[in-house]
Length: 430
Image 1 (tube, rainbow, N blue to C red):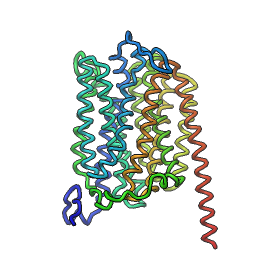
Image 2: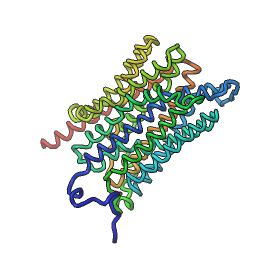
Image 3: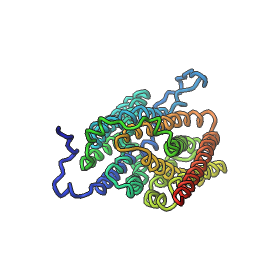
Image 4: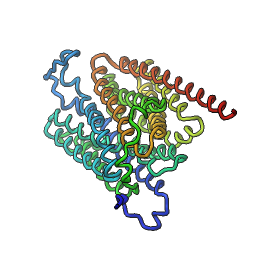
């Protein structure tokens, strides 16, 4: 019987060498490039939607009533998350068959195409073609979200938390360059505001495509492709599983909820575009700069404690936003939201890796990211409507309710873990 070859044919020297550090570096760079595109998109998509939407067109929506097309300005961003949600399961299962590098390559090609379609939509002034481009970019996003899991594929159990955390360092550059590229590319194509920004998204996908060809992650073995392991229902009965999923799900959705609405709120309160780009820039830095230490903090204080800390930071941010709508409030709150997201998302990802066996990883990761990005899609779609119809403070109150729920669940989980540890200690003593 012949076995599936590795994704690259390693030399004798590389066969003896652990590829984890190189893989982490390549994934770190690729994630930085992908997140630079994502932060650029977050900065300009809602404003591009406002520019393309026709205020004279009104849609009569069930349970909502008449809404002008301009109230759907964040739809281009919302359908990105729908595209991500719809693609998380196929993307993970596909990589379970063809391997990480081939799957990531397909994802970047889709991102390149999505950026090009967005440019065309802006040139043509076509709002719905722009929304379709957002859906394509969402499919692209589904693939690169698995970079964090790929970092753990060749890592030892002891190094997994740090491998995941180190990959998340790459997007620090997204915080620096994403909004800057948005500012400088906004008028790059004369007479078509923001078209240059989406051309830059296509270029970033092309760069990431090249970097990913240096990955050295073996293809799934024949046994991993044939054996599916335990049923998902059995895996989900482990208390760690729902906590891991819920932490990532609520942390990501709440971050997206506030990040999507912030540029619209700042514009509504007469802050210039440059100020909104500055706030997003610092927010993205807050999301990824903690990754230098998040893995170490989880090893020292426990993953659940770090996730709980993240939820508290979200609640503090909501409190800050309740005090006013000045530049200081928008900036400081969104920085705290970024740090809170890092603690909850990296922590949730690390917890999830403790719940599955190698042959189960594709379906467990697929279920996790489907739950995460279905919630994120709903949050992104809802945030623009809430901001437009009810205002900024209702957006913040909604996040406060979600985080209070997360806080209760995490406290329960810590009590369960503590009780289990005491029981094991008693049995060990006996």
